[in-house]
Image 1 (cartoon, helix red, strand yellow):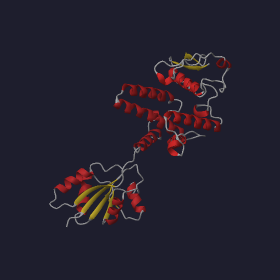
Image 2: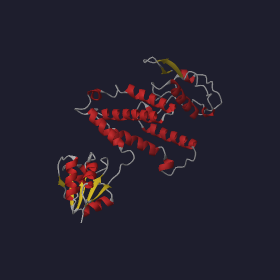
Image 3: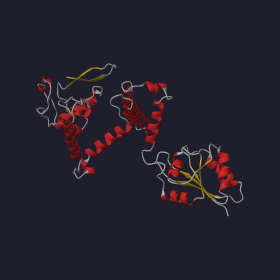
Image 4: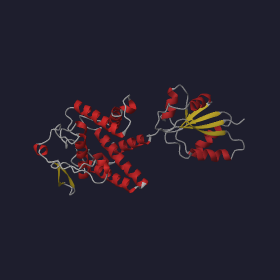
Length: 334
């Protein structure tokens, strides 16, 4: 009676012991478990679980297929897949069984699947390889400061791609932006005093999203986008008040311009200033502003920002344009 050959494959991005119940049942019922090398993650996990695994070494696919099919002629055999997916093995097995009058039954059993976001692990691994000794000399010499121009460039290219509506172009440019995040995070691991890595970056934004969406992750109420925005600003203000010594970004803004990046394009910076002004109700009394801003005349139209293309003017004296070192234009603090 012909036996059975099972080719067990799984995602290399999932912990090797996390297998489906069907996979574990097949492993438990098999007469023999075969693998390539003892350091293969899945084979190693099975040995740690008390299952004996025979290692065949680095064998070419045709020879390996003959061995597996022959061994499964009268018993149940499981080939424990390698991390590289054993390229060429399934084709070699198909070729081998096709020439036999009574071949063993062959099945491919998927023991684990990639979860959404799994390819991000590949990006982290590739970035680490490029940055590590023996990797890319250009990547190895970069600093967080030297990469800033690429971060800005890729962000602008992604915005342009989105405006174009070209889906392939959008996907590609978003990937380039993602690369900059991964690259910066990998470089940051090597900081001598304050290192952080991609997990710290991801963990920080996850925590922030959960904190600022209590209507989703807690028992707060917010039934409209306007209520969500108000709650967001209130939570952000509380976070700012709890921080000390952080001079940028979310550290808080005592003036309309505080925390707005100097490299932000003028129109986006003006939009942010105007949004802050609107959240004060048009009253700057609660903001600590320089004398020229406190004395500034406010020439504002009554139309809200979302009413149409004609937007209220930014408070006079809040911002003025100055030449940027790159030849473009950017905001300069008044």
